[in-house]
Image (cartoon, rainbow, N blue to C red; front, side, top):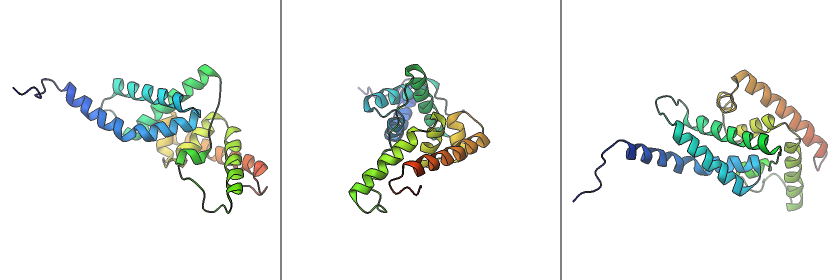
Length: 180
């Protein structure tokens, strides 16, 4: 008796989506953690992201799966911020998971630099932070625009302003005083 025969296309679609979750769960989770700074909250938002994605999943209409998923995740995080009226961001180095910066000589200098990066990010507007964090994750201007729901020109403008503001903030707080 063979009970593995599939009667409908539903199980096949679930298997396909499970593959998507397996591939994107960790990067989406890290991205959300970098936005909210709370591990359990990032897990909840990640789960909400994939539930929403599953409900709306139509492979025929999705041109860039990664950008689509990150847009859902960004929207979930921004909705959380609007509801809670809190902004808590973690340092950029935690997002990109690079560990210790080899250009920094001592551990003390690394800690000071990491703290300065976090402080500079915390002074940015939420959309500017999102732009910088998405760019640091390797997304193009077009992908950032798609994820934030704006035009590519607006994404470039936001990113440029975010970089300028970050440089100004980091320059003021930099351990060396010289800026980024």
